[in-house]
Image 1 (cartoon, rainbow, N blue to C red):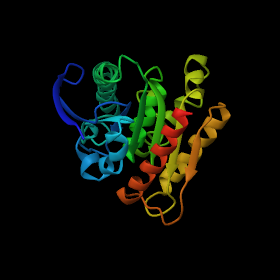
Image 2: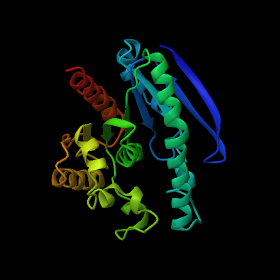
Image 3: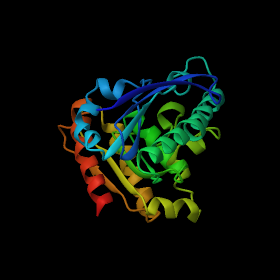
Image 4: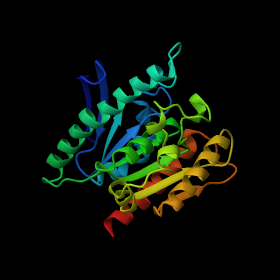
Length: 254
């Protein structure tokens, strides 16, 4: 497997950001880490190993990026607006710096063919992947979100602050009427999954709410609730990512 490490200064964040690329060609996959996670977490947790056959066969090329959650949602002694201003900067980094690099390299490695990105992540990484997917559908056509939250309620309470509204999918999707966004969602492959075991209660609730919003907007999606033994941990996420990646790629090739 070809693996490369990258470190570059971000003009959006005014700091260095790191990421790794796994594979030589295939559909670009952007992975967001769990809470306060780093770019190497996905590999260390066995997820790259679970996807190794897809990577080696050139079906997917995986980018694992850094989070800055300790400067945003988990920042101490910061006001909400200050946290969300920093999160806006992270969004700008992904949109304006990381994604263009992904698309450029993907085009180079796939014979000049431009292909949209599959976003994925587990836990808070599922939130990040879903938020990026729904905010910027011009770059994405697939989502695999595992055990995620889809609002900012956990961090700021039931009344979403104005500065957080457009980063709280359950809120902005419910009120979204623009065909530009809705039509792109409807032509994408959306997979949302959570377990029903330990530490998945809040994820079950928000996954159910997201399911209802997507149905109201006539957005096709596979929203699945695994068994009561399926806990909020890497053991199950490894099983889920292989199962759903296989489904996603099979559908894409039909």
